[in-house]
Length: 117
Image (cartoon, rainbow, N blue to C red; front, side, top):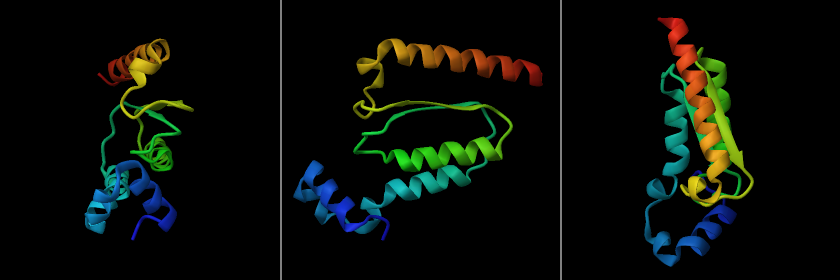
C-alpha cells in the first residue's frame, strides 16, 4: 500500500525474510506514523535529529513533517540532519554537532517560551 516494490525489497534485504511474513499494516506503519504526527496539533518547540541514510526512518517523511510543522505552528521547529549516521546513534557518531544542536534548541526554546509568559 505505502511501500514500492523497491522499498519492500530493501526492507527485506536489511531485516531478512522474516519481515515479509508481517502484514502490510505493520510494514507501512512508518508512513502512517508520520502522517499522524503531521496532523497532530502540538504547538511546542521541537527539534528533529535525523540522517539522510537512515534505513529505519525515511528522511523524506521527516522532512515533510518538519515542513508541515514549521508552517502550521508559531513555536520554533528545528532540525539537524546528517548525511550519514546510524538510526538513533547520532550522539555517538557526531557528539559535538549533536550537543551543539541540543544547546541551540534549548536556548531558542527557552527564549521563545519566556516571551510567551
